[in-house]
Length: 329
Image (cartoon, rainbow, N blue to C red; front, side, top):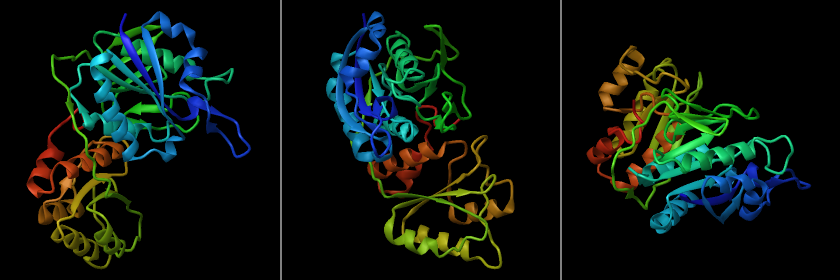
C-alpha cells in the first residue's frame, strides 16, 4: 500500500463552535478517526502542522509547508494537506511553484462544514483526496474537492457555502472521483525529478480598478511594493478619462523598476490587451506584462516566486511568461 502523509493545517474541516464563531480545534488524529475507512486505501500517517483559519495563512506558512514536504519527501508516496478553503487556491498555487515537476502528488483538500457535523462534505473530500494521492498516476500539486481533481494553478473558490466550492478556470479537471473510483480526463504523468524552491517575495499588491478610481493610489504603491498586479476591466483596458494620469502613474512605476502586470477582473477566458486601444497603447508603450488566462491567485503566487528568484527585469519576465504547471494555457 502507498504511504501517505496527511498534513493538517486547520480550516473549516477541523473547526468547532466557540462563543466567537467557528475556530479550528480538531486535531489530525481526530480527523483520521472520523474517517476510519481511509485506511483501506493506503498506509496513513497524520501530523498537526498548523491549526489555523486559512484567513490567517500567508506566504510564511506555505514556505514552511513546502520545506516540511521536502524533508519528508523520500519517506512517503504522496501528501494530503487539509487546509481552509478561503485561501486554499492561493496555497495550491504557491506550492505549485515551490514544488515543481513532482512525480509524487501533493494534494490540497478541505471542507465547507466541519468533519464532526452530521451533514458535511468533509469526510467525502478527505477520502477522495486520499484516493487520488494513492493512485500511481497521481503527481504534482492538485486540489481535490467535491469529487473534482483540479490542477493547483487553475483552482479558484467560486462558491462561499455550496459543496461545489471550487472551479477549474479555463482548464479541464484532471479527473473526477465517483463512488470511490477515480476517472481520468487527463493522464500526463512523466518521469521527472522534483524541483524545490525556498523563497517568496510577498511585496506584491493586487489593485482592482473601479470606474472613476483616482490614479494617485499608484503613488502609495510605488513607495511600498515591488510588483503591482492591475485587475483591469474586460480584456485589459487602462482608463484615460480626461487625462493620461493612469498611464503616467504606470510609467512612474516602471521607471522605478517595479513590475507591473495586467490581468482581467473577469473570471473566465483571460485578457487580451491588444484588442482595444485602451489596452494596446499602454502595453506597447511600457512593455507591460500580461497575465492572459492565469487566475489572480496564480498571478500572485508566481509573482512572489519570480521576484524571489530574480530582481533582474528580463529574467523576471522570462520566469513569469514561461508556462509552469499549466498556469498559462
